[in-house]
Image (cartoon, rainbow, N blue to C red; front, side, top):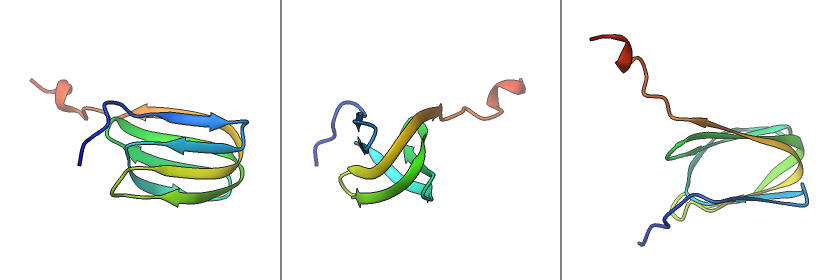
Length: 84
């Protein structure tokens, strides 16, 4: 299987969100969906949200509802840098 070069997230008319290279859906409700991708987490906030498609093997994800915002949080390196 060939890997795509980069992760892509698209929001269409604040009603549909699609994303690539998603590893897992960590949690979901009608107001928030938390996704895991290689670089960290993505939190999609809104209302009346429903996951309409997710394939763990291809990494393709789609949800519908009213999208209010998207927040990325990068994978942290932990406390590795605190100790010498």
